[in-house]
Image (cartoon, rainbow, N blue to C red; front, side, top):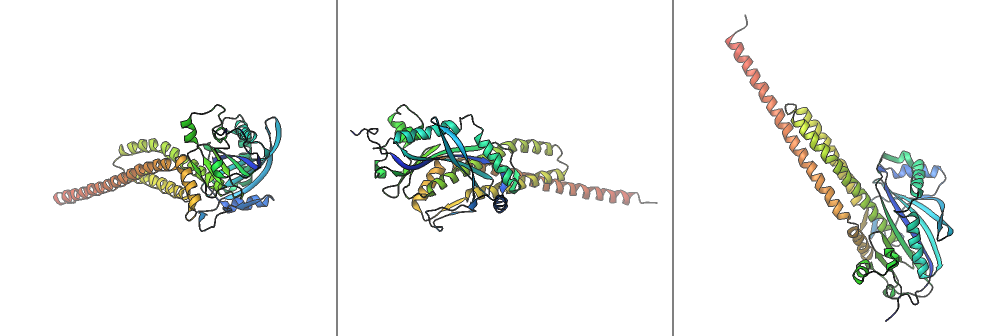
Length: 374
């Protein structure tokens, strides 16, 4: 039996990227953000997938990529410089990426680096780095944010990428000659076979020398051609999850208020204006959320690239984006039904009021006929 840890190849070139995604606004004017950024003599460019033909994969509206100043990080007792970048999406999400280069590391060292990055700037780390970077970005492009959000909603993800091993490696051997489990799980103790199998179940390869393995909060990518397409679609899936969570929570907060307003309005059922006003508010909410969620759904379109489509679909399923999206659709349906009911009640109230006025006019005519004016 082959010992996985016996002779794992060393990592010659690669990197570890920590992603932190924030909902910062109702929408972002990317052209305005790009102009603001360029006025400060900084680098920025609209994103595109590097290794995939445009007709195979395309962004609905290409996000804006920005390069921020590097930051120092202390990992494993050593001081390192980490590259920092940001990506702005039209639908109000921002991704901050902190990338640490990995060169000439043994596999165990590379795996340890991944876990150290998670410990230092991961979701459980006591660090202000992400908030400082976000504040820096907001200060630079703040005027481009439409209705900035006070929400603290965020997502995080960790991507370990290898471009070159010290010796040739085929995808089929990864997992046999190299133990991916400590890197993907963050656990030092050996997992049960069932847990290991589940952790490694979402693995995809197109060529003999590439591989991506997805988990809930981490991914391993072996890409000798240095394409970033896989990492990009993983990021987009996380951004879609973040925004769908935001709208799910927004509607969770709105529904109780809606019920209270409906009851208050019905206590004043003789006033059709109250029905109409609330109905317009609900219609506006439904139209706005529907428009924005459609932008989120259409953030990335994968058509002809079967491999990338499989990775993207698996990421959406793994992150439960479709389940959260379905929950948003159900809550929107409740609000639509409530709007329709209020509209009908408003119409009935108006009709009832008109009938009362007509009856009153008839009574006036009858009285005048019986007691003519003298």
